[in-house]
Image (cartoon, rainbow, N blue to C red; front, top):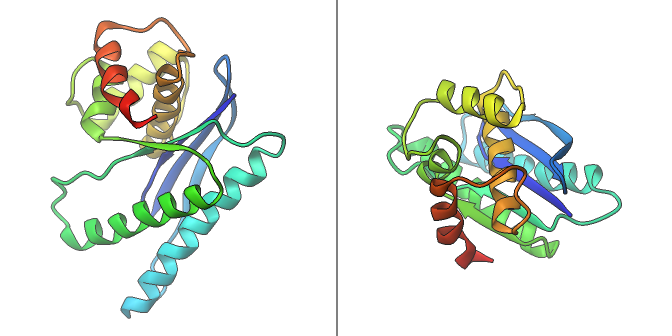
Length: 181
């Protein structure tokens, strides 16, 4: 069984691919920069990011398809509405491509992911990174990659294959998310 975590971003999309039992097969970032001022340039950028995500998953999971891809949902409280609109486009394009590959996916809201990892629905990036390292021994210097790992771990728990013993807050999150499976 393989679960993929995706923390979508216009600049640095984090991904982590975990095998049953918690073994990290691959983890990293897909980087992107703006290429022009016109709206079509941003559209092309979003398509390129989405295609690179699918190509990365396909390349790094050559022997079996992912059992689940877990995507972090949108942060609707973001201050930059222009970026939120573009990120929404990326989010839905990735969903379409995953569906075309018949790779099941679920969406985890940022606050839900924080509750799963830290026990509460708020907390900054450093708390997430510290808690992931402390509880799962996964070290990353990038919060996007760390969130991708956390998403994959959450996915395993939702598939009844938790990487470690599940806490009470995690049980609540799992119950909430399982309706998507």
